Amino acid sequence: MRSSSAFDKLWERLVGGLLLFSVAWLTFWFAGVNPRESGIGFAAIGMAWIVWTLRMWVEPTHRFLMPPVTWAVAIFFGYAAWKCHSASVPYWALQEVFLIGVYAVAFFTSLHNLHRQETSGWVVNGFLLIGLLSSAYAIVQFTQNSQRVLWETQPLVYYKRYGATFVNPNHLAAFLLMLMPLGLSHAFLGRGSVVQRILAGYAALVMLGGIAVTMSRGGWLGATAAIAVFSLWLLRRPQYRIPMAALMAVLCIGSVTFLAQSEKARARIDALTASGKKDSGLFRAWIWKPAVQMWSDHHWQGVGPGQFDTRFPAYRTPTTPLSPQHVHNEYLELLVEYGIAGAGIVGLGLAAFGYGLYRTSRHVERGSSDLGVKQSNRTAFFAGSVAGLSGLGVHCLFDFNLHIPAIGVTASVIAGILVSNTRFATDRFWVKSYLPLRLAATAVMSGLLYWMIPLGVSAAREDLHLKRAERQPSVDEHFFEELALAATLAPGNPMTPYWYGEEKRRLSWQGLPGWEKQAQEALRWLEASARLDPYNARTRVAMGLCHQWLGDLKSASEAFELALKLGPNDVAVLNALSWNLIVRGDSDRARLLVEQSLVLNPWDNWEARSYAQRLKPTAP
Image (tube, rainbow, N blue to C red):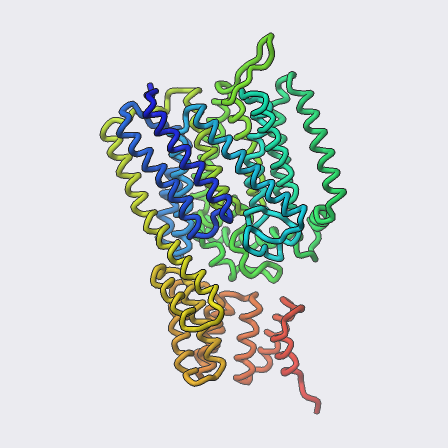
């Protein structure tokens, strides 16, 4: 049996505290999307990993719990790391695999350490508090019509949508719908005092309000799915049918009232299938079609971790965005980047996860007696977690939630605690920590940290210099010094030399003394970017502009032609090649490309309009 010593209890509390701190930090600091700030949250997870390693040696009775889903997690991480070495742009692949590693560490750490109901209980209460505060902030933004995220200005694309500390309100909705059922389940099923259960229910209702003001249609659908799953759990018990019906009535009345009062919410629903609106729901379908084509060309092993956006321009249709970054469907993105092989591993893992939950459900649910229903925090956590993760799974059909650290880490911790309940169903998956196994586990843990820590530190330092470059009031020597430092710290990032080269090219175009030297320097940096990312059409355009400015029309033409091959539906590519053709005297082809450019962007395409005017046939 596990040691019940106070020292062992302290180890567990320390791990739980570190994981909770990580979730709180990532959530309240822009959801952890900035490498420099998210590093603190990731460091807390790493410290929890170290504490677990120490606990394994200090407590000789400590055992490993290894149900089938854990093997799927480990195998998928290994597969992703292997795919990283063959990726077209290793820099993006490393970032993707690093994030998977963070989630795996959080999952295994919570799985093996948060076993006591006391510890997991206050971790869950911490999650509810985080969700409550985030929702309250979003509701305040809604009531004040605030367009600020902390001290930053929210992008205009999310006008009148409110995401608290999440820049993208869709991601706040995903985060809250994962936690909201935990509040409901502890209100209905929890063993705490009446006050504790009321507070849990209050937190759940506030989180529902937070989901509402995000104006996220996928969030609304995911929350509905989560509530449906939780309702199915409760409705099996006659004692809960009337309270659940009352809750449903409150939710229906609240939803109707919100829709009646919120013009933005009604507009979001109306735009769901409207093709001419910027927030149309068809936006995702425009991305999914080329994504499916990309997968069909690389169906077995995919294009590689984090490579979708890199390879997207060649598959882009005229109606799709230039750079969507993600597929906006986690399952399709899994297929595109990891192929059938990777999706098969994840599919088997999800099947093992689901089967394990099915077998465990009978052992975590307490029955009823003549005195009423027996309350249980274990049952409450199980039901709420299953409902929350189910809702998140539905929302992942429409967004890239697992690429947001705050969501991914929280889901990993919840899943880890949930899988640990397997121990109530069977003892088959316990493995004694014999000395050879502890040595092997320590080697794996140490090796993973040895790889991840320098990578995380490097990303944070690179981000620091990139942010400093962004904040420079003008493009001067200090600006280029910061970019050069960032390129030194992360030599694999193709965007840093592209940024450096493009700004040097713009300076050269001013025609001031030394313009030729600036153009040549720009060309060197752009060539470095092209070597790091051979699929970026914009880099080839910038190179072509440099060659043309230097008078090398042949090299310019070659660069533009390659850019057209890489990005056939990119307006900037079409316009650049059109200009090159005009200079070379090929008016017929230039006219065709200008017409194509104006079809793709007939609104603010002033460059193509000027070329079209120039190419008009002269009167006889």
